[in-house]
Length: 456
Image 1 (cartoon, rainbow, N blue to C red):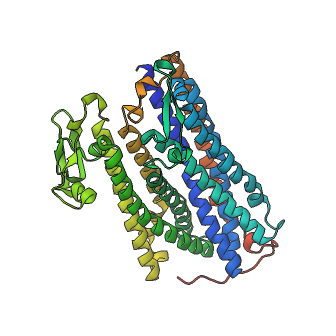
Image 2 (cartoon, rainbow, N blue to C red):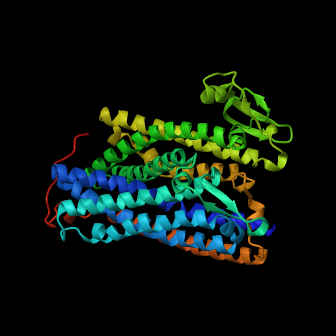
Image 3 (spheres, rainbow, N blue to C red):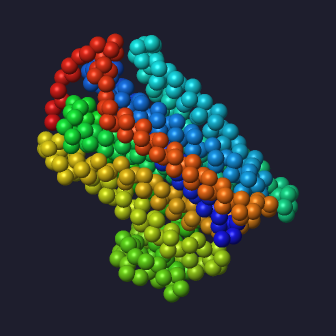
C-alpha cells in the first residue's frame, strides 16, 4: 500500500476507536442529569443509588475517551502536515475552542461530580452534574464545527498561492454556522444520546435477567428507554434534515448514498442492494421508485443530480458509501422499533418477565455504536476525494516526508495500545457491572434504607 492509503487507514482506525467513548459520555451525561434531578425532586433513595452507579460508569468512559483522543491531534502534524498548514487557522481555532470552552468545563466540574457526594450540598452537586453534561455537549459542538467546515467550508478566504496557500477566517460566525453544521450536530448528538441510553438499558436488562438489583434495574431501564425512544425519533427527523442538506451542498455524496447515476432523473430510495459501479446500476436491490425524489422535493418525478454529473475522479467509492449508509438507517429503524415495543411491553406490565426481549435489550448497546460508526464512514468516505470539499484533495493534504514504513510501524503500535485500552475498559466496566450498585448509596449519608418498590 502507498503512504496515502496507509495514512487514511491509520487515521480511520484511531478515530473510529476513539469514537466509541465520547458518545457514551454525552449520553450518560444526560442520563445523570435526569436521574439526579429525580433524586432532588422526589428524595427517593433509589435515584441516589442510581446516580452513584452511573456516575462511576460515566467516569470510566470519560477517562478512556480522553486517552484515545490525544493521538489524533498529533496525526494532523505528522501525517497530514499539508492539510494542517492549509486549514490550521480555521481547524485549529475550533479545536482550541473545544479545549477552552468544553473540555475545561467538563473536566473542571468532574472532580466535584465524582468526589463531591456528601461533601457539598445536593443542589451544588447537581449543578456540577449539569455542567459536566453541558461540557460534553460543547465538546461535540466544536468538533462538529471543525468537521462540518471540511464538508461545507464557509466564512474564509484563501491567502497565498500554490504550496503556500492557506485558508483564513473572514467571518468567525459564518465559519461556525457553516451550511451543514446545525444539521450534522443534531444528528451526532442524537446518536450520542442513544449510545448512553442503550448502555443504561443493556446493563439494567442484564440485571433483570440475572434477577439481581431489581429495583435499581427497573428504575434504570425506565429512564434509559424513555431517553432512547425520544432520541431515536429525533434522530429520524435530524437524519432526514441532514440528507436534504447533503443533497443541496454535496450532491455527489447523496448520489452515492442511493447509487444514483443519471445526470438528472428521478431517484429511487433503496432498502438494500449492491452497487455495480462498472455498469452504473444497483443489483439485487429493493427500492421505492422515485422515493428519494419525493423525500427531497415532495415529487416522485423530481430530478436528482446523479454521479454521472461528476468526473470519475471526483466520485466517492460508491458501493462502500451505499452499504454503510443503508446499514446505519437499518440499525436506526431497528432501534426505534425496539424502544417503542419495549415501552409498550413496559406499559402492559410484561417487560420485566419477557426474557427474550430482555436478552435483545442486553445486546442493544451494540446498535448505536455500529450506527454511529457507519454514519461516520458514510459522511467521511462520501466526501472523497476531498479532505476539504471542493478545495483540497485528500491526496494533496498528505505530509511530503512521511514514509510508508513509519506509518505501518505506528499503526501496529496504535493497534496494540488500543487493544490494551479496550481490554482495560471491558475489564473495568465488567467489574463495575458484576459489583453492581452499592447498598450504602441508597442514602446520601451512607445509611442503609429500603427504597419503595417500583411498579411494573
